[in-house]
Image (cartoon, rainbow, N blue to C red; front, side, top):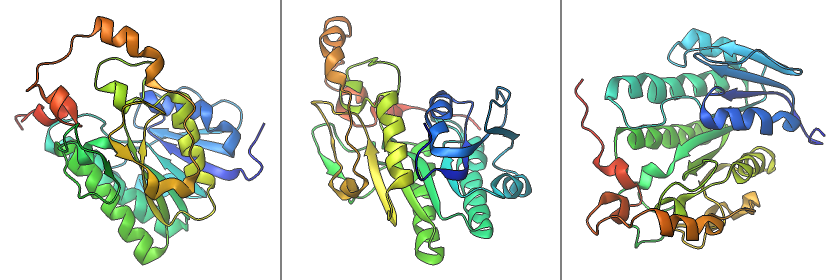
Length: 270
């Protein structure tokens, strides 16, 4: 059943990615038409869907992509640590092009897939909220800091509301010890995006994305107005993980830092 305040045309970027595929299904009730975009790999459109191949680094193509939409869920771009040049094009130039298109076409609300890696150099013994200074753990994290700051500018200057989702680890299940704290189930991901889309006033909000895990490094009090209440937890899988996944060494980044292995990734030769 469609949401009673469904968007007329909602754009989902990164629709062929892992989380994009989850959201393609999950967002359907929230829009009368769902416009799906990625560079490659998109399945043919189903009922009430549109498919538009687009490279986010192509400014004119992004202008055409955003025309006629009244909301954007931006999950496009590179989602791992990489060389600077591809990150620059996909995550920095790309997000600028998207917000410029949103400004020119009068889009009022964006949900931006940020990442916990904007604060990855905090230690796992620390608990932080969205007001803590950013401490990115790599070039990928830096690109997400740029997106958060850019979205803040477009709200302050042009009134485009954005909810930045600092997503933890969203997978079908818990893979390692770190994910006992960072796990975000697919169901909770869809609910978090729904809250970000339909909360009447969000201004510029930063929310961490994790399920109701016993262990958590993140305090979401500054995004409480979204009304997000996670239904799932990593704790259901805790016994299995602790029995089958060895505890990393005390000096292993996966055990020390919130960003895990990302803090030690690279550098990559250009």
